[in-house]
Image (cartoon, rainbow, N blue to C red; front, side):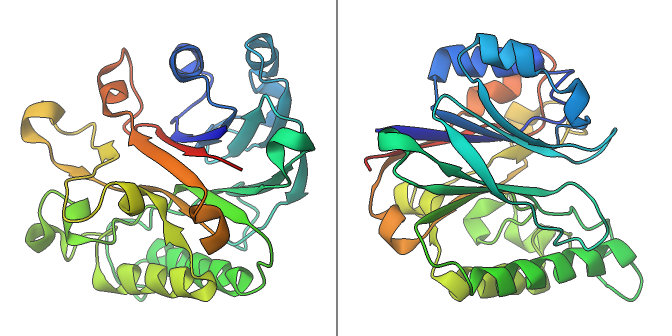
Length: 265
């Protein structure tokens, strides 16, 4: 059994107590973090190693973005793609080693949010997001081994992935052009959406609630922006998936919550 967790932590140094709580309560074998907002030299490596996560790969950046994968299983970095094509730290890929890891490849990605206007002619950031997805799709065509890709995709593709399909159709993260771009990425490798494999649509499934909502639990205006997708052969080995929604109510929380998937390799 191998357990993989993914979480947009929105500053790992600020929210290290929450990371510690997650690791103590859930004890995943691997944790993929997005938006760590720190350079590698300031990443809390010693604290994580003390918790048993001594195998670490960090692709950091000062103040913004950044991804990190930490593990109790030995691993090695296998890729670090610049799908944004501007040097931002938004991806790192690792291979899990040894008998427990079985060579599983885990890709950790933070897709750009895309700004506020869903039009590349008026909003450079939206164009960058679509171009990121296109580059990622070309990469997916080359994947030739069991692979898991996780992270903050910043797209909620299904109607039941948002609190109001009708009201969000023109809001970045749920527009038809983004949903279609993500569908092309999915088709490029036949990725299985593990969240919806285990929590079938149209069941409610959110992973993000805005800080702007005064009472996120009562209003429940969530979106499923975070995903865990697997190659078909690996998806067949996924035995459980859960969304740790209570983490949104922890002290000084991230606006995202962790996802956890268990595999029998």
